[in-house]
Length: 214
Ligand SMILES: CC(C)(COP(=O)(O)OP(=O)(O)OC[C@H]1O[C@@H](n2cnc3c(N)ncnc32)[C@H](O)[C@@H]1OP(=O)(O)O)[C@@H](O)C(=O)NCCC(=O)NCCS
Image (cartoon, rainbow, N blue to C red; front, side, top):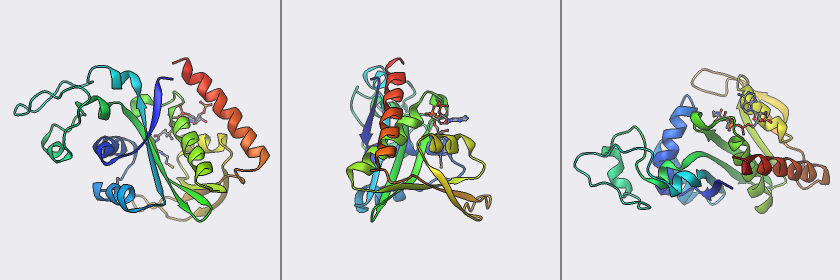
């Protein structure tokens, strides 16, 4: 398959933040990612990469005049990034990231904290690949249920979650501080139940088939 899921590392964070800015009305500071990746042993974060971009040329040729052109497959030290043009990432490893997602394990519940695709790469099944990968992680780390909050107006995300068996279980009023919007609380059934597992495996098989065609 053209796409791969990798564990998020600190080197990925500049690109993650770039996508986050395009996907959400408000964003986490970089320090929040540092805490999540380095200090929170219950947190699991992933990035989705397009191997064609990873193997190919950088998508952007804009490089600050005082910096030498990046060598392929070489990351710049993060400390250089703030002074670089903000438009996009000139290094294949970073430019190849199209989306990201994460969850926390709380006892036996996996709480999805974030999931976002770059707007130019939506409606191809890749948000679904991120969610399916989070559910795979939920199985690996021994969670029994997966839960999340979603804006009441966010029908695309709600459709994605319903497809994967999430159901509405309540509302958190004025949960989002930017516009006081309510959040729907959604939960899966027990993911180890035969019914859930079978539905999940069937959805994943269809998804992988679809992505193989791309
Ligand atoms: C939610 C999001 C991750 C979906 O990513 P995506 O790559 O476009 O989604 P996919 O192409 O994998 O779609 C999977 C399913 O999601 C639902 N869906 C996605 N986009 C949709 C849309 N615009 N309208 C209706 N349903 C949609 C559908 O059920 C779809 O399944 P289908 O292809 O069988 O119809 C993406 O829209 C996004 O990044 N949004 C901004 C960030 C965000 O809102 N995150 C969720 C926070 S709770």
